[in-house]
Amino acid sequence: MKLTLKIWRQKNAQDKGAIVDYPIDGIEPDMSFLEMLDVLNEQLINKGDEPVAFDHDCREGICGMCSLFINGEAHGPDRGVTTCQLHMRMFKDGDTIFIEPFRAKAFPVIKDLVVDRSSFDRIQHAGGFISVNTSGNTIDANTIPINKDDADKSFDAAACIGCGACVATCKNSSAMLFVSAKVSQYALLPQGKVEAADRVLNMVHQMDLEGFGNCTNTGACEVECPKGISLENIARMNREYLVASLKG
Amino acid sequence: MAKSALLKSSLAKKYWMALTGLFLCLFLAGHLAGNLQLIFSDALHFNQYALFMTTNPAVKLLSYLTYISILFHAIDGIMLTFQNRAARPIAYAKNNAAANSPWASRNMAVLGTIILVFIVTHMVNFWAKMHFDENFPLQTISIENQGQKQDFYLTTDAGYIPVNQVETGGLEIKNRTEFYDTAAKVKVKEGYKDLHKITVAFFQDAKTGLIATLLYVLAMAVLAFHLWHGFASAFQTMGVNNPTYSPIIKGFGKGFALIVPLLFAIIPIYIHFFLKA
Image (tube, rainbow over all chains, first blue to last red; front, top):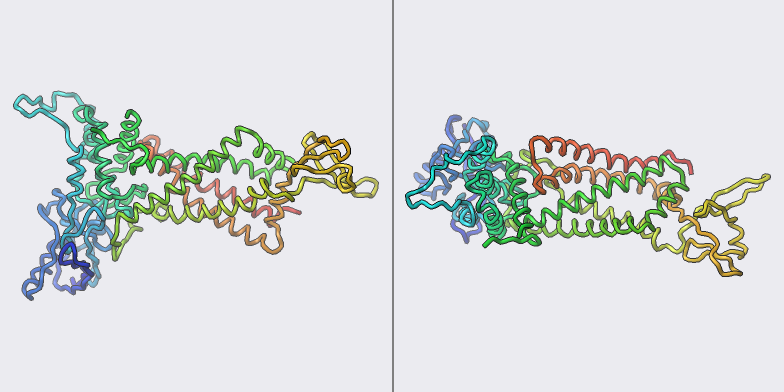
């Protein structure tokens, strides 16, 4: 496959950055998108140029490290996959492919396509946990009976890998799908109910502090989410927040 | 310590958007029912309805709630839009938003702004005239008697007052609608503001009637897109998302978004093209 890549290059956080064109040849349709970038970087290094910086780790679609806004969509045109699981067969020979970093005020660019997503970590720290005594006499979680539907929904919410595709794709750069998944996975379980009110209030507060936008229910996040996190979670977070606020 | 902010958090702003939006949907349904009398009723009944709507205390309370809702919905919407814009300082070079979200959902602010402009002009054209125009006409009818045509004012006690009684000075009109006996200085009867006549004249005007009709229809199309996303979106914001009820809410919302603006739009079309003056 012969392609034209239009890649965002930015030396560091202070640099203005710009789109740079890279023609590339010899790409196999069975390569993953990141392998294609590996080929490009090898060529750049051999020429003595600076390789394109991009985030990646497991390359199995489960760690949430890879990102990239490809041809106008987070994680590219395929559905239910992260960029590392996107394959070049989704593109045609001769295509022009735009590759940009996830864009949001709360996700500042560090270099090229690498963005700082530690705002998600700070939201997690604000309440994305349950307080359990781990001093050696921890009760087995399975001793508490849990309704199967709730357990399934909680697990679905917990499938969120925190990649930030929801923020990247949202026209408002809203983090509400992420935050609502983290709120829901605990709110649905008896272990999480104890701190449910504080959790939702604190996590939403931190989300607002980080400078994310506000959800307008376009549903784009749910479509682009590699883990299929449902908008039902946002509705649940809205309910939880309303009830917690009214209780005071 | 939990950080509750029911007045200023991102979610609070969304709740207010949803609640005022849903209240305005109720207002639309009520306003439509009233307007449809322009097609299915006569001038007197329409003017009686207009009188009721401008004087009944309960309706007044609702109307103030409506003004506040429109203002709040607009101001809150502007605030949210500015925050949302600020959340992405650098735009994408290529953004294929059509692949993941409906057009209306991405353009609520633009659609809302057009609707706000429409509401203001609509209120200038009808509401302001009805409330403040000193020369607002009172409803009259012509009755032919022995080959002679005579004009009468219709009065709220289902009576008549000959127009020439006012013209000759026997009666005078005070406070825009009240008939006073000039000599005795007492209120005799009260007339109806002829909103029906003003409305028909507005859409049948030889010069501007067609443009007014077309702009009205266009505004209703914009409203339809706004409601298409807004109705169900308000329920999602208030936390109602459930496999049983959501399909019903979404279906009802889309029906509401199509039918209500369509019925509103039919009225000026009917007046301009079909109603005999």
